[in-house]
Image: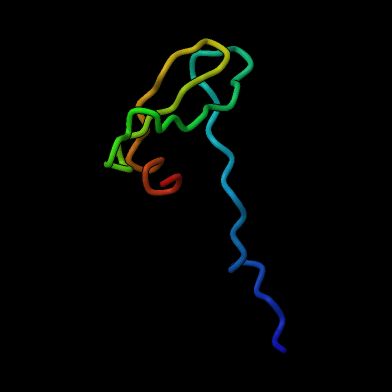
Length: 63
């Protein structure tokens, strides 16, 4: 069996930190309003309780 190339192993991405919180709490992916369209989610912060629109890069990586 050939060895596993470490570049091919991709772990789960940690969500980004909140831009409004001092301690940069991790954002939660909120899909409660998405309905039938999976691309209509947003970020939610449990610290400051604000919502943030994901960037196009976020939508690609966290879809």
